[in-house]
Amino acid sequence: MRCSLWTVTVSLALLACGESLLSPEQVKSELDSKLRPGDPHTTIEKVLNDRNLPFSYDKHANRYQSILRQRDSNYKAVVIYINVDTEKRFVSAAAHNSYTAP
Image (cartoon, rainbow, N blue to C red; front, side, top):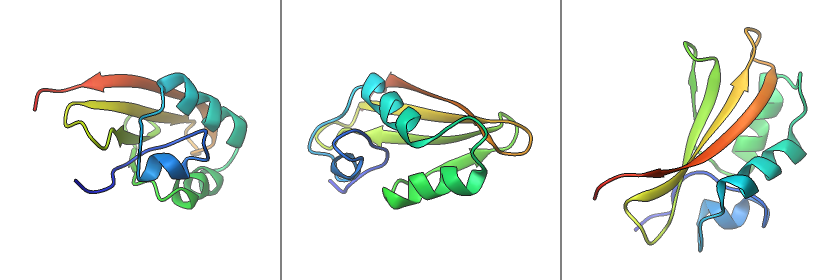
């Protein structure tokens, strides 16, 4: 199984090739430590790119999104949203568990 998406706390790098999945709370804490309200999209994208985290931007929801998949599981993941204002400046981050059928 190949390395998957999103990360945090043990330096997001551990997550990127995920030996274990961090909790949504750990992910949010890491994002909150790296991003401040009003940070521009370039800072947000740098945080994501520095950790080799694939992401997309949803212009209709005004947010960046990513999925952190557990390396040894096809059904559990942490979904991450980075909410921005109309000028793509950081507003807030959210993370939650997601479960899908294999």
